[in-house]
Image 1 (tube, helix red, strand yellow):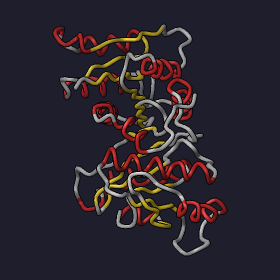
Image 2 (cartoon, one colour):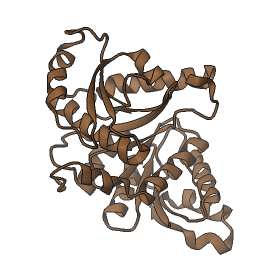
Image 3 (cartoon, helix red, strand yellow):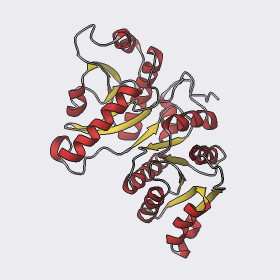
Length: 306
């Protein structure tokens, strides 16, 4: 199945060179992949020059003038390509806040989703785990965390085949009353919330539960804490190896934005060419599985909110 991926050539600390590298790797690995390169002419030309003439029909461009071009402009143009039906998904390693806001504006949010979260998948000793938010909503309220729980459960079921996902709330201890004011207020609301995909609230979890994976399949937290935890675990796993000792079980340096009407994959700003290639392949898989539409079907009242 063809997947048309709009690639933000200006996103990331080492753009555009690292994005060009990642785009070429993904292109070579997937013969059904079509790229739409969004950014300056010279960066797009670098990809085209490395593609065999017979394959160039799989590469499109949305070139932008380099003069006074802001890095966020390419991300916004990539999202408009999806909104206009020119692309099936977006991959960017650009500014997270700008991507989240632009995604909501260009694609629309699902009802009751005030702040779309970023969901990452981590390897654990027991398999894998969905962690959200990892960088979007850094100062959420109770409503936002409840929404994260519902979105995370749907994502775990649809994209990763988890049956009746267990949803936990990350805090500093599992005893009643532990945590800050927000964490003390949320558990009762979690227990009363109707979660999709047969999911259930599994209670409070701690940092070590994220590594073992035995207490929950989905772990909900704020974007500030989640981002710190994610980056710390990524570094630890890169240097010491992931849980279970499987060298292939490394956390992907890409997250899916949930709660918007389109497939948006956000990579780390420090992503390598290999990371970008993985992000593009991930976006293609999510499109081919119709993951966003399937998640929307699991969550009632899924009309899009501008």
